[in-house]
Amino acid sequence: MNNSTLSFKKKTLMVIGLAATLGIAACNRNDGQMSDNAAADAPKESASLGAAMDDTAITAKVKERLASDQRIESAKIDVETNNGVVTLSGSAPTADARSAAEELARNVAEVQGIDNKIAAPGAIDDMSAKAEGAADKLGETVTDATITTKVKAQFAADDQVKATAINVDTDNGVVTLKGEVASSEARKRALDIVRKIDGVKSVDDDELKVGQS
Image 1: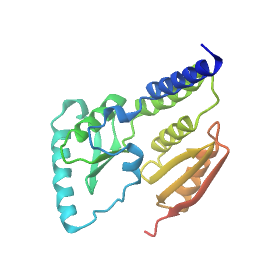
Image 2: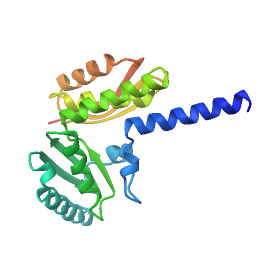
Image 3: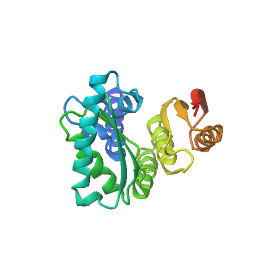
């Protein structure tokens, strides 16, 4: 076996290992549902009156499932649906409760995707630990996926930032933030969080806007 074949196999195993360690959510998506990144980027308003009516029905179904499941009885979860994409926000006592809420929402037939913004102490710790462990085990420098995971985890844990709609993307260590925050203070806080994360080379915040409210 030549060196190029060995190198290819090593890289393939590294990618698989990183995905498994970070617990990529795509494995849990139902057929036809969009990726988590696409769901996070989706418009936060219904496209038409008909869509709004359908979204209201989906929200009701999701809330009904959440209310009847003992795994999340201590959680405080808000549900919003736009064009079939369900946004879950609020807080859960554990990472398992957070995952259970997402699972219940995904299993509503009309749901097109999930944007899970639920804050859970266990989930935040697990996300950071898994991201750091993946980089250590693979003997690699911090990857873009690891940086994105850490940014999202710290946003979810921060009182000023967690309720905002910020999309995070990392390319070669450059973190791009898009979306809207409630105040200039929240915007500054988000930038401060990103700049302190290992591996971040710079931040592109041109499309991170302060809301008008």
